[in-house]
Length: 152
Image (cartoon, rainbow, N blue to C red; front, top):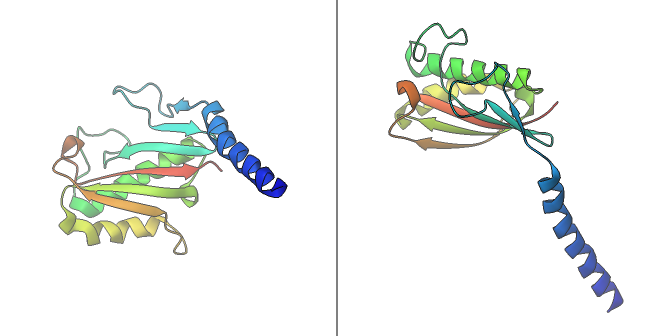
């Protein structure tokens, strides 16, 4: 009986401690490019995790009002470059990405998106991933990807 009570007390203590530890970690709202013009943060750090806002294929140099031309492959390449840049400016890199969520305007472009996406991860170390078809993305984008990464 004594071991059972001790085990139950240890389990209850552990179950309580995890939420308390997470609650004690204050989020850091990162602005790697300076103040944003829209109501979101490019990355939020909580503990050793980075939560990145969804990225679309807008040019890194803001040379145009929309996404890069060239279709799904060009957009996916720009999205992944944008993700890599936010990660690097926020203390991480592509090797530390653990989860991605992909939103696509047309799921028929799945294979073409995957062909580019896969080149950004080494040695078959792909993050967990979910994908959704959608009826519309910001600025008429074909693809948007958000991710979670650990800090280096």
